[in-house]
Image (cartoon, rainbow, N blue to C red):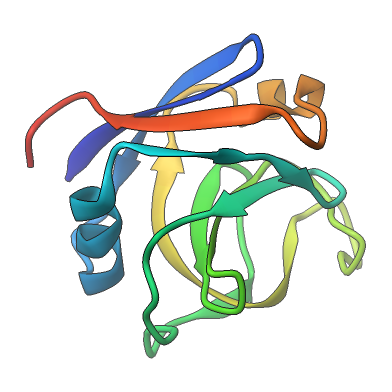
Length: 126
């Protein structure tokens, strides 16, 4: 697995990418600078990666998971319920490929507002 850092506003958290084709494409695209969009307890932002959803893409995700949303294309960080959730768990708008997870308290991203700049960088070679 490869380590990254996600910085938005006053929040900087480490994360790790898994070993999947989509995660490797995101790794190769780093560093990424974009603008945050919010959707319930989810932040997402554009990434310069265009690929179809992987076979195991899903809408039901866990707090702290990172998802690649092919319709964006965007990277999503889930930290609580979204408008399509049926309980307190996150639920993506449409299937995402889970590409990693936040290491630490992903709920800190609740303080990040729509329009905030975000930067994703490598912290460790994979």
